[in-house]
Picture 1 (cartoon, helix red, strand yellow):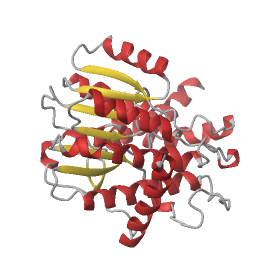
Picture 2 (cartoon, one colour):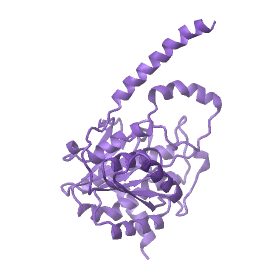
Picture 3 (cartoon, one colour):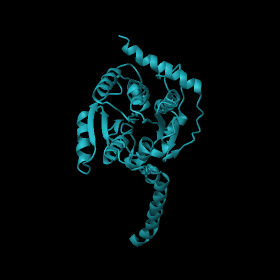
Length: 325
């Protein structure tokens, strides 16, 4: 009986393994490994997942990395783990809570004071919470809108002059293919009128990722010919702690396992397109494009320039009003 089962399952395992290898090959890999000594990068959400993997590869190439993290203990543990294998580069942990506008402002002022140059800003941090939680920040914003989008909008604008003075420099905005399911409803930006889940997708998350795309598109337009390039990145379906608050039954995990084996990337694999856009010399003359699998990705979503402009103006008002003191 056991021998018969082996004859059945062994070929299945081999086939799945081969399919996995083919999938991994199609995901792309950052091929530029040039020395990044004297280059300064700022990575949000740097102590876990894609952010941690990005930091690891940047310091491997001798870059100086500002690790913007909400939890300093986790940031220090991350540095200790990386240092067990990599001795090059420099990692500077700094506290940043993207759910809190005062924290962002304070963080940005420290960066502007302590670092003469910033060559790369990687807006990576993100949250995903069950829609039923309806979590609001202290500033009164939906946590997805605040952390995934508005916080990064504010941070980027606070650091923009420094990045213009550090050219050539790059801004990488991490989004998601799920943005194709998002909508920008100016009468319900903060979800105050409620949101309806679409299948298993959280519309608040999808909307925030679409807002990131509109932000990056408008930012690239405003930064044209300044030497600061902007890139949008979909890292692919990656195994990180992003969905840790989503509860699933054991049955869901069993059903999901084959999908995970074929489509779920490691954090290192998910970081490849981020690294490609942040460092690859071949992209020096490109800006405002969306990348996936280390190549340009053509989204099914049609972007409207007037929406990008309006979202920018509203976001500027939402952040500026907090500091019109």
